Amino acid sequence: MAAIEEKRSPVCVGIDPVLERLPDNVHAVKPFPESVGRILGFSVAVIRAIAPFVPCVKIQSACFERLGMESSFALESALIGARKSGVQLILDAKRGDIGISAEHYAEAAFADDPMYARGADWLTINSYLGEDGITPFLRPGHGAFSLVRTSNPGGDEIQNLELKKGGTVSHAVGEMNARIGSRHIGDRGYSSLGAVVGATKPQDAKRLREIMPQQIFLVPGYGAQGGGIDDVLPCFKSDGTGAIVTASRSVIYAFKKDDPKWMDSVADAAAKFADEVGKAVGMR
Amino acid sequence: MAAIEEKRSPVCVGIDPVLERLPDNVHAVKPFPESVGRILGFSVAVIRAIAPFVPCVKIQSACFERLGMESSFALESALIGARKSGVQLILDAKRGDIGISAEHYAEAAFADDPMYARGADWLTINSYLGEDGITPFLRPGHGAFSLVRTSNPGGDEIQNLELKKGGTVSHAVGEMNARIGSRHIGDRGYSSLGAVVGATKPQDAKRLREIMPQQIFLVPGYGAQGGGIDDVLPCFKSDGTGAIVTASRSVIYAFKKDDPKWMDSVADAAAKFADEVGKAVGMR
View 1 (cartoon, chains in turn brown, red):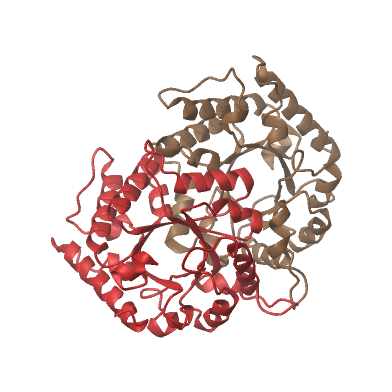
View 2 (tube, rainbow over the protein chains, first blue to last red):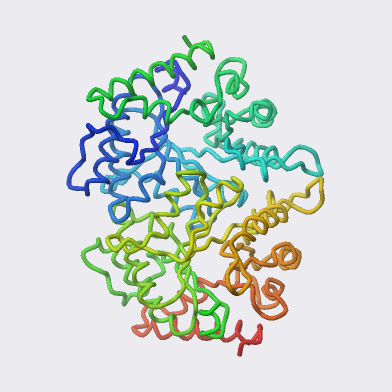
């Protein structure tokens, strides 16, 4: 919340790099193979360009994992780049396991052993496995965003099923997160267990906001996925806190491939995105 | 199914190595750091020891991911070791994402580019996100096991909720998997989309077997987690096909730490496990 106040906007930019969409003029980091080096060089350049305007970045683990043998080196290098830029860092890996395996995943995301230099602040998780799939991720100084209501077309099939006791599956997942998260509340009254609530489900966001008063909502689906500013406002409380709006493609690919100054275009898109959301919630 | 017939037992051994439980006498693979080399050396030795008796191994991705910078090298080396041993290879990573991110995860698990030499046969996935979180993982020559009913204590909270339309959440997830999987049926009448159904929920296994007639069930929870042979039988069809029973700790740690011949003890435990399940389903 301090980072949001400093940048005067509750936004996050998703770093989801794919080779085909990179600008021509991107530095390939050595000694990685060309493709890995370009993905990494692009990611770090984007983070540097947007860091003055946004409090938070979300790095998509899958984009790095597919790179093969060097993937863990490359991902950790990107994480180091983000940490140096001073933004809050969400690793978007949607991990979901129990017991010792969940502890392994938490360690992989959060450990800041100087040898490894990882240290994401937040991790996205999947809570279909229940409480023992969530608590291992709630460590001092770190937090998790649990998938509650996703923004994709197929998200309705399970998440929107109606329950015999009333409400839907996503409401029950929200109630579970509210209960578990209430044991991990910080100085500002919010929990270190947050919730992913898609911008494309505004009718559900209002109800989920009531169910989870102490959860920070991470709200994907803004921009390229079709959600607009009116769709994300129900995710916030009346005081303008409680949610972080995420955009990815509309910011990180806001350039023509042959533009040598593509980083300026990315910075402009991030500034515009931050301004739009910051104004809508009364922070500017 | 051919691998199961060849070994005359529908079993899988989970490779979930943790440093604290390794035998004293384990080869640390070079040039990895000591801890990474020991995890890798143990994993490959276990796979070699059990390969004569079991058709299938399941490698827990989390155990490798926590190893830091060298983790993707180490995981891929373990995968190569498993492929050389001729067993069917399940990567237990419980991945769950949509669209291009899901395609990245599928590529990371299944690609067999000679440069990277991965090539898991199967991947475990989480289907809370719905159909667009499942179909990217259904590739020719590969398959996925979707989490339907997990064996952990917290699994009930969401999975066992009763629906207004009848049945439970896990039944609805099963129905979704049955529908999507029916588009990917092989020569033996089973789908390349399977289901994870825990051995600790025998009362649910029978109903899920009816809901998913074409899914192969991957059944964890046998042995150390408390499930016995009577608990897993409802996961099979009456002809003894349709499920793979998984054990991990009860096989891979079946030794005294200071036993120099610990691999023999692991092999014996795998042989006994395969024999017990093989007899119970009438294959021996």
